[in-house]
Length: 464
Ligand SMILES: [Zn+2]
Image 1: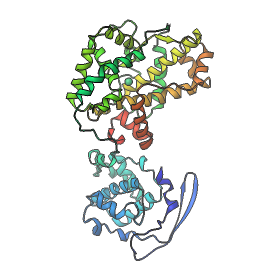
Image 2: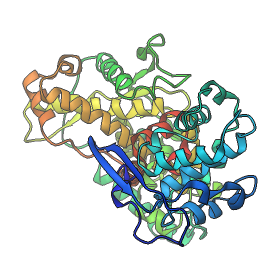
Image 3: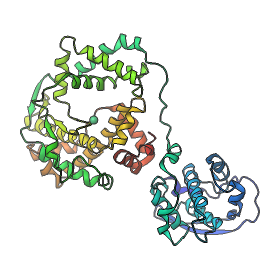
Image 4: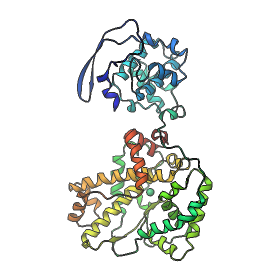
């Protein structure tokens, strides 16, 4: 959080222009559990920021505000602080007639002190939460009638979106390179499917019903992602609508062509070839083109069977009906003993449940974003995989220390093997490239924004 450390470099060495009335401030503040004292000998009174002079009667333009108060200017806020101040000042000026007896200059000074002094955490004061944003500003400026916040005009999410947009790659506008797809798609896709053909080698079967495991993961997830999951209004799975009606077995499922096509379509999007060919999910024609191509591939000898072997071991969540299909037959490697293979299979099952549960909780508004950006579907999978893996790692950490989850999670796996496998490195999930992109965004915008985007549909908070 850059804001917390800001006062250490304060005042800025290069002040813009000579200003009159320097005042001396001696302020004490706490940051990262340390107390700092700042002597700000060059600070100016906020008279310098007389809003009437700077902005007229309202602050309408971020560029202007940024120029006057932003990075490198007198108070030298960070870019994020500037953005926040802009909306806060706009809020004050816009509502001053409704705020009895407010002195905008004094209030502005309080805001600058608090924000540039690193006393508030910008992200904790979410401007897209209209009511809380207003209330927090009133608190900072010491306005007593905070209950007024509900009736004040706050920035709305549509207004804020461009300021919170991150530099996610803009969709490329080059047309789909059909010639390139003609040459390479079939070979590369079938080759990929063959390399990961689950139909070879020995297998191990789990006989326990996955329901108990799913319930344990579900219970933990609800707590872990609190309050975000709890804030979802229409959960597909709640304690009153039990998860047992949402699980299906993949073992005996009959597959049909639309499902086969969707698997091939999904796998194809992971090929680097698609980026080379400028494939863009936001373009309906590209979508249809790719779908048509994979549908034709199904008719080739052996492809349907190859696809079915994948489908048999590919857990998934129906996006509209929201059910989880799970397998009970898993691959067994030669070097594994049976107990170890059973424990590994159980962990794989837990990993699948973790991932698929995230699909359950994913807000439809966030899912809808896949239609608006290039490789949207992959990005959704990236976030799903990332959050699912986070959940999975927490479960593993608990079991690695023989924690209380061990018995509710292990199914038929022997305790010793199950705990030992939890102590090893967690294996990499699918959708690596997409997960990497999602991870970068996660690191940039932080947990609160990512969770709010994913679970509550505030996609603009991660720049989508
Ligand atoms: Zn998925």
